[in-house]
Length: 269
Ligand SMILES: Nc1ncnc2c1ncn2[C@@H]1O[C@H](COP(=O)(O)OP(=O)(O)OP(=O)(O)O)[C@@H](O)[C@H]1O
Image (cartoon, rainbow, N blue to C red; front, side, top):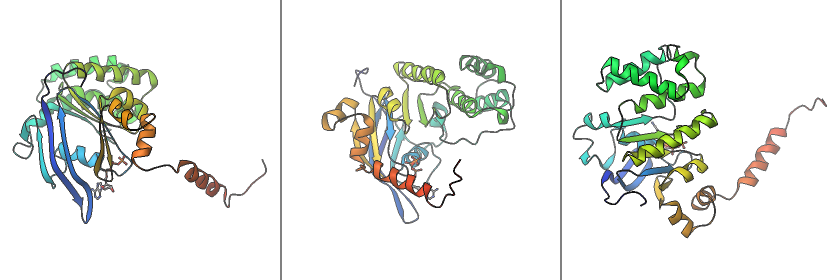
């Protein structure tokens, strides 16, 4: 633990189990997350990462086990804790027909902020994220990265204590990625907690002070990058491969390439 002297649990997950029909998706998840941690939550496609996040956000209500956020069971008061969290979903249903100003002020007002206050804050954040010129443009005319920036801004308007980020940098250019990484590190220094889910291992490795690896609904690793490296060798990508038992990338790639070639007409161009 780098920065904190006293550990204060901010998210506590106990014996979490979740099934969709007969399929068990989360199997006995236990996690204590402390204030000020930046958690890299990783795992193969379908491991159960989004499901865990959706349960914590109160978007999926049927599950077994207990979840406490800010020291209270989320089922006891399913509304209050949400005012103190921000969420950047993997795919967002953003109101495309609105302008960024309309959308962001609407979100701010949902959090109970005054229109003038949220309007000013949103405009300043648009400026800082280098998209001020489209504040009054309709979101459906934005590029993927511009939309993603609007979603990130919307998640920060209420100055959340916990930020859940699901693949937040997708579509964002390299300069803005540097800014956002810096913002996240700064927020953590101020005591915010960040739950960061991504498949981009380089970013997770650099950003997170604790990495949790989920495979087939179970936690298979939980520790700092140094902890993981003391048990296994290589980069986070290679540790990920080792812990998920994956060593067939060349064979699979060759299979894909030879399948692509099959049956295609060679025009001899
Ligand atoms: N609403 C649903 N109904 C049925 N099955 C679901 C539902 N949502 C998720 N699942 C299943 O639960 C499993 C975990 O899905 P989840 O989206 O949590 O994985 P993930 O780790 O976030 O994957 P990815 O990295 O691809 O985003 C998958 O097998 C998925 O098919």
